[in-house]
Image 1 (tube, rainbow, N blue to C red):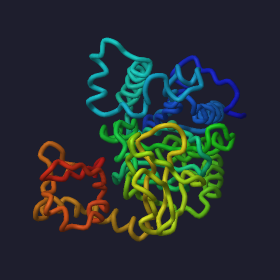
Image 2: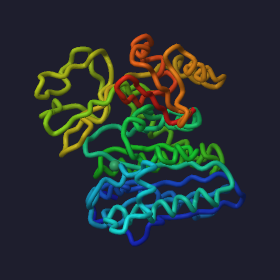
Image 3: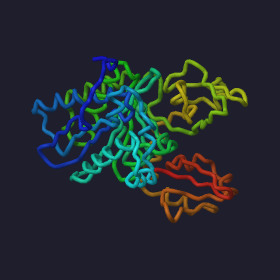
Length: 379
Ligand SMILES: [Zn+2]
């Protein structure tokens, strides 16, 4: 089925399956951007298969349409991006707003539906947010860099990108990470490519298995792993974001043509131009999510592959709590109000390689004059 056919949906809940035994929850949001219905097609296929009744399930599997009105209009959103309004402040203000715009109304319903799913769960709650992209390219997974999330996303044989969600404010998955859910986002491929539906279906089967809703070793999950495994090409399995190229309208930013969603770039390669001149790759690395269409505040993200050895080292050091020691370094203290935020004196910030903090997930940097804060999603 092509996603270019006129898509209609009459309710937020795409499907719900309650298992024979109590257990974990997998809740998926698909189409939070209304021009991205592929995840809903994928979910319908999975529900159709599960409804045959021969697969024993535990807990609950539920899928919601994200932006119902925009899905029916076939547009990304009407007033504002529904995947940029999930900061605590925005969610708090939502309930007191007297004049709600189209996306506020969607968010009120979606929030209530997800809250209800979390509330009735008798096990761990996993939340996935499914997207597709305008540019072509292989599917990939994004997640906030916490230990449970790192462990969960390893089931997907796709490039998995850590640290990007933390750099973008108001993302749905980050909101649920802060609520102790295991959250991730998935970009399934190009909007209108039928292969994107196949990829997201594969991601669903693997997520169901890893969450513990379906038993291990289902043929659907094995086939899904095989399908995704063939798509990764020459992109490393695990990527970390080192930098977000933030842009404003005044920068006259122009990405060089030809980059895919994830693309290798050698040191010195021309990536983009702006009013100050050429922007070149600072080292061998990976360009992520280059901006080609319309306006946005992210020009591109810059990152690198992470070796298995480094991943293992990080896991071990985080499991034994070495990261707690960061707050004891001279010139560094943990924020009293937020244990996942470090406050560095400016002079001290220069003493330590930023990589030490990246290593433990502290990637979101903010300047406050004399101080610099570095924040992460959780341990
Ligand atoms: Zn999207």
